[in-house]
Length: 574
Image (cartoon, rainbow, N blue to C red; front, side, top):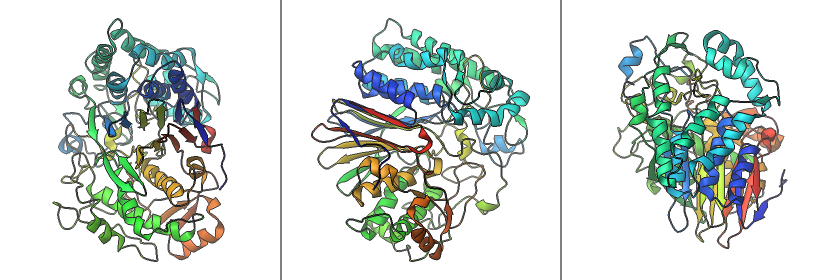
């Protein structure tokens, strides 16, 4: 199997991310004596600056963290809905679906408090030192990615007409590819957070910065901002429901992972407020059907994987949500029931199962998703960011920051960023696991992964990609544990994903039997998949996935790998 890059090996530390400036900043932290928590946070704040179309300070963050000698834990940086967010309140404005852009879908911004919580609880550096890389890049400027320039160019006229602060920050003038862009307002916001903790010990300094965010100048500015009506994707102007009190009443949490043993490793995922358990369910369903070893991804393997993932994602759509009981999801008998539904031909039906304690017949949102009216929906085409970090002492972190995209809602001029719109993933229908309600976490697509092998080796991996995140990780895991590939070769292998699911973002469409594949899978395999009834889209040779990976073996060897697609992600290691 070809590799686009060598499989990196070392013994000191590694950082892999979706942007080389985040990777190099995180690696600089390790080289200067910081640990993985310090490096991950520094890289995360840099991503706010250099990938503003994919994440921002107003966004969210799930991470899985393993400190030496302890079990992996989830850092829950997904903010909750406002206290005033009710179905009745939104429907009173004549809205049938939560807008994908604007202020109505805004939730508590959780990414910044989560990164600061990580540094407080497991780091060694002060917030000022961790923030310094992002401050420098925001103030002095960086070369803007072509993808960022295209995103701004596509929204520039809308910004100028409806969101003047966004136009002033990004579109006057709109940058060309590789122009130098600056965000002095964001640099000042981060400088004020750093100054809040100046002269204090690390833990107190982090708490002071979190307080300045959640109950200080940031919360006050957000409170003023959300009272103004702005145009959104419903076609009308609406003020937001989020208030400063909502920020003050929320903090990130540490939680247990959901996990499952599989082929000599334990796969750890975020809980029911993410889509992560669907990956575990797909692995559990598929395992008895897999060969011990295969030479390549052929039509049979891709077909089986696609059918298992369809069933797992149907359960996601029917059952997952903040606080949902997924206790039966990984039971052997339930997995066997689901596995028995996998046949020789592609299914064209949504087929969720019945979980313990739930109604016998699961309920999906009313109406065929394919007939729902189209809106602007999630404006990033399902993309986001990812960071993996390993240090020489054995701390391993997998983090998937997202939300707060520059195109998702109007910029807050004095802060230099905009709010996220994660509540668009909730439904304005009662009695669903994802029905809108006050102070709940929207079920996110963000889905980092951690592997802990039987010998203690630990790996972090993940990818951007919305509904595709766990699917592309599924393909990578099959490449590693079924084809026997190293991580870099598994990332580079031909990938695929199904679109036979209820889209997590507006418009809530689905494509019965939809299967997107990279053309490198080969025409004979693609033809056979079509013969089996899959509605195949050839996505081109190098188009699916932006995976990254960092790991520490039991003997202390550190490994890293990154994705060459989009010519943006890099890994660094020593």
